[in-house]
Length: 418
Image 1 (spheres, rainbow, N blue to C red):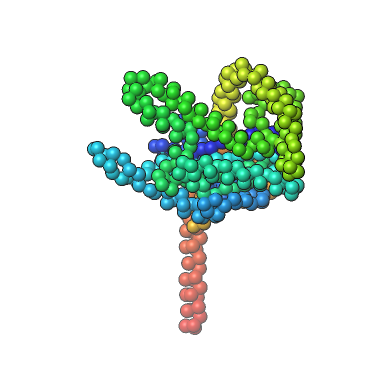
Image 2: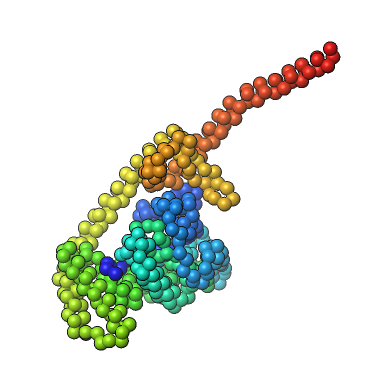
């Protein structure tokens, strides 16, 4: 398997973002979308209203059992953890209170492999290799989380996006909050606690130190993941931008690492002696490339910040265009409002004037997705106006129908009298 490691984590709250109790989309101060725990679970389970970004007819998610083996059980376990009462000091005495709605109560990590899903689905051996690697990654996460008192609820592999990947969901059944499961947050909190007395005199220095502790803990989490799982799978720790390699150099490094992994696998299976000298030389080549690019790291990080800023500006423009396109489609009845039911939350559906061609429908759906939540509210209001107009139009027709019934009855009565 050729490529580089991709693993990340995030924590979520029932409310989504602090101080934001609206029913629509929520955003953090950075402008990033703040997903709620319900939305994260819905997307992982591939609920239709939470999975517009994938083909609804694609392969279903594959569950990797953890503490539970179904999403219903995972939701129940999370609901129990998120309603725990936490201890706090009130006037010098210990007291209990319910967790805030914006307390982070769901931990989620994702591991993505450099393997195209279509290739894995077409090759059973490659698919088995992916499942084995993602299962091993889940076991590593499980051990890491349990060391700090957490419980890994469930893992799920998605086979309906470009690359094979898995999500791992966890809770803290003792505390409810999952801040302690997040190594960066835990390290930052520990640093602040250790320097609490100095914080009043030099808040800036303590804040900078806490941020350094956060970054160091997250790097260590990535390093541990690499050493335990991805190094043996033939992946590199970083991508080409981090190494500042040319394409030829990076392809060579990929080939070297892949060959190392395959040689190691053959050595283990056959119990043969592995050529340590060749491995050392190949590792030194990679290490040399890394050392040669150390001086360019700061420049690369600066360029990355510029790229992120440009991407944020692009996302705002895309949301505006999506709103305009979606409002026109709703007014033209290409898209209609779908009321909520006991089994489904409110959303959008194709209307009577929707394009007949599947490709055009998919294109329309893709264009409006950046503003999906706002468009649901707009469609709801349009739906209400249409219902009131239809009710008003129906009143004259109902009166005429009743008059016709009365007239017919009177005619029958006159006939009987004669």
